[in-house]
View (cartoon, one colour):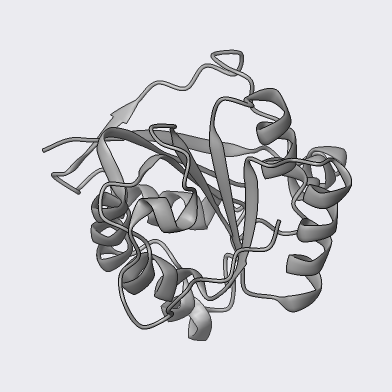
Length: 194
């Protein structure tokens, strides 16, 4: 289902995103074609999922995927990730935030466009409920190391172990592609603390 906020210029209340309460809400930042949130929503019908995607073509694919699978617990929001995190999403609304294979902006002159920064960490901490989790994966080792340098130095985040079979976690289309090319996948899991 497509999610169109009632107002793009104020912070939403959680019932405006999903009126069913209380249910855990998971947010997929940059949900791409919607494969990951659709698989999660199908596997966890007792949870709600919000996929955020900036690109129109990808957002449309994700929306069609959610509709075709008749997933009432999945909504797709077409919006810039930073704007959604900084200004739109409610405080302490998410039990989990997923950032899977973001653009690493490999050219040095583009590094300023990378998503994982101190401001990004403050935004995810605002959106995560206490004890909520941030899960991050990338195939780009240099980007992972830079991101970890930021994440581990955040007082409001505590790194957790992430065993491969700890819980159901489907592969994204990018993950399948990189694994098919023999690239190692880097992953990290953090918990929001006070």
